Image (cartoon, rainbow, N blue to C red; front, side, top):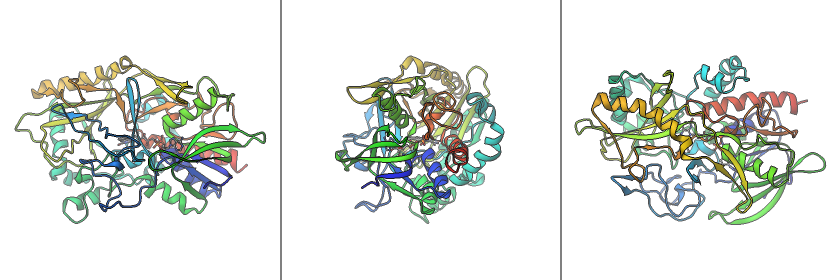
Length: 501
Ligand code: FDA
């Protein structure tokens, strides 16, 4: 069950939520976290907590009848399989021309992501959030976020001769031949653990292809970092399989939530009400935006403004593959955790940061895969759909074209110099570039637009957004370090000015 009231309620358990709960707990504030997904700590009959990557079972996906891998095919064979509907760990939310991959469970996206922990370039951070004091961010909050998240770097000597990164070394060679610079990508996957995996000393996870359906070992997901620390304060509790549906304000100024308890097939066990004095939305760009769009347009929080639901972007994500020559092996063993990126962000016309992604299929595929992050100014917005009682993203394929154009400039050059071609069999049809899904949804409740400069929602006291919804559609790198650092900054201010007052 749920308590009837808590001084603070945090919705979600992803990055923004976890930071907020830890700092509230440390300050002695009783805090309840409401998470729609499960706690992932109990092994199933196969001895593992998470589904195997290459033979997904019901644990892999959130309430789907079939797995939905980002690569739909190899040589046009569908690689997905039928599964039982279950409250699994990876969701894919579809909106017309764009679908969004999300983590569900205690830890949110940290359970399923590639662990790449990248601090954005300061000049770009200043461009996207010009009213945030960058000196303070780079002096205090980015270092704090990196330390709490347990960010580490790969041992360069090991990288140069291990089998698991042959795919990355080959892509580096091809990029450098075309005049590009590559850079090592920090990670929250424990690289010492990975070395012991290779040595056969511990159970394999990254070296057993695990990533998007959860890592059974090695990854410092939020349940092992921020959330463990939050629980350790003794002031924070986490309630799972609790989906917040509606938010309204009581006459005394506190918030009342309608919360749906789910069973493991997505059915409704109960609907309950819970109150909070301070309400923190950490349900992610999609989740937090939907809650506020619904509250505004159904009239439960009628004072919310037009900026709610605006400024959304996919962080310019484009995925592509290149076909390698027969003699250029990428290796049948590929670490699921990327470690290297091609940094062309300084290109004035087409800034691109392209992570060299694994294709951990367990067999040689003669292919190199990339997730390119591009600088695309197009933004989508959300509208409320009464029939489905949900928020719908308005985004068209044409809005993503600039991202493809930018990636193409650089990968055409890499292909040209190396005499290679694109793969056309990876995305379900014959396209070479895939920009119809994102791993990096950002925006919807943008900092300084829909909220003040610390995430306080405009029009309401004691109502805050803490997560990726605050970031205006782009960070130029993988986003979780930015989300974490911004949440650290905002909660510092809110604790000092609003709660301890
Ligand atoms: P996040 O999405 O993490 O958490 C939101 C939580 O709220 C979820 O647990 C959700 O279940 C819950 N929730 C939503 N609505 C709710 C409701 N109404 N009631 C209750 N609970 C609700 N980033 C990066 O920096 N490096 C990387 O390598 C990658 N790789 C990557 C791979 C894949 C496959 C994905 C899907 C994503 C990534 N990312 C990534 C992106 C990164 O994971 C993402 O940016 C963050 O998790 C976003 O953090 P938030 O705090 O915004 O929310």
